[in-house]
Image (cartoon, helix red, strand yellow):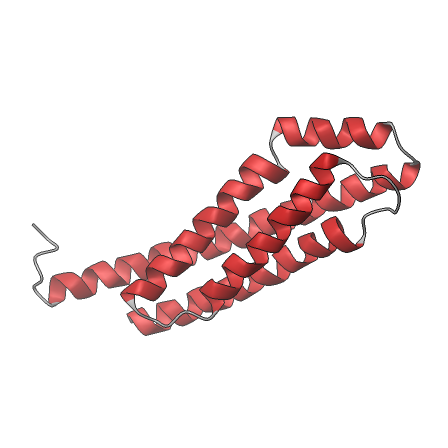
Length: 151
């Protein structure tokens, strides 16, 4: 394959990740039960909104070295937020503890947020695989062009 073809595949995977992330954002922000909220829920809403901006930038980037870097940075940002914010034991414990202290609809909301994060993990894995294929093509181009990348 060529770099441009791999990059087109990467863009498609980033679009699928953006769709999954949008679903997570809806679950976190729009499906949230009314009334007094949880501080952790507010934080997760902020993270979801920031992630949307990161993925939007990645989806619009050109098939260049800078574009590859922008996309890689966005994927790394998403990976860290999923691992550190949505799936970390501390966050999950805080969500479950807070939901237990509230009405039943909060428990359903927590389940929806966790399902949304799980969908993002699957889409992120596919995007990361596509990213690796792009890097491989970029390195092969650099070697073919004789820029010294093989030293």
